[in-house]
Image (cartoon, rainbow, N blue to C red):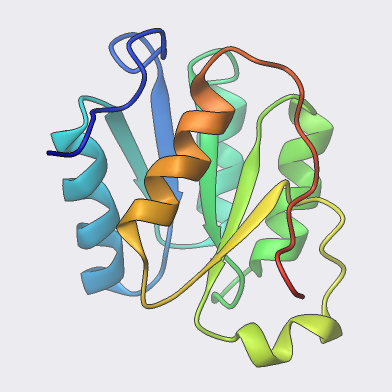
Length: 142
């Protein structure tokens, strides 16, 4: 039996922002996080994500950001979000792991690759929503 997200998370009070232009991937993230009692906001583009963060500065506790998107890619969106609120953890999620060396990943706190390993996702979200402010860049082997 799997444990739910840590009891001391802010899940019941705060939101997770899913930024994903692929409808099916977005739905998977949303449904999984809703099952774990998170309030979920979603954006289809980086531009939309920045706007959502601007309007919900103190409500979003973590952002799951796709890297390749129309209008504004995830790297630029992450940079702008960190300028709005540098303490929001931003987790890059991508199917383009082989291509990550071409991007400045310094605005991301961690990376998870697609197809999503939900066990790994749970570990990452737990880490950044547990209330600990001891974030460290986790780029696995990238």
